[in-house]
Length: 179
Image 1 (cartoon, rainbow, N blue to C red):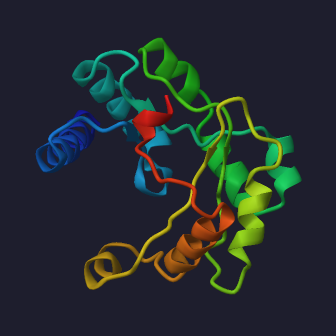
Image 2 (cartoon, rainbow, N blue to C red):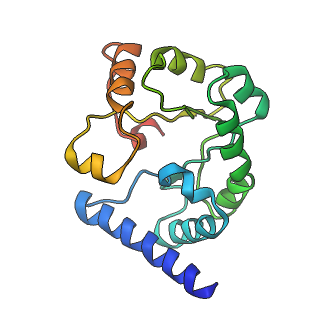
């Protein structure tokens, strides 16, 4: 409905405003929590907001699509990864038409099971990479605020430790420095 589209666009603008107000700059990279940015009504609003608000090529958008063969070869959360990839069909083309760069290749969809060996999963996420591959992960330390905002918290410290151990001494840099 037109009302829902206006509300979605307004929320995206509020979130971008909040980011810019807090950090004093535009984001390097945009995605949606739990891949919501690929859903049809949200997708269009995100693409429109980025295209209007930022110079072409200055802000990346995460494309969680990948080939079914690559997802299956990795063998991690295959059904979930295939579903997310299917939802993202067409995002890349739509973004590039608006001058918004996206990654080419995606992995990191995980079952969020604290009993799994995330280090092993991380190595599998690097199998069959795309030409500009993006590996998603959720490293972090859980505090009361995060616990209130996000139900997926148990694996964050596990992912942080696995990422830190994956390539010891690897510097953490802003996404914009990778371009």
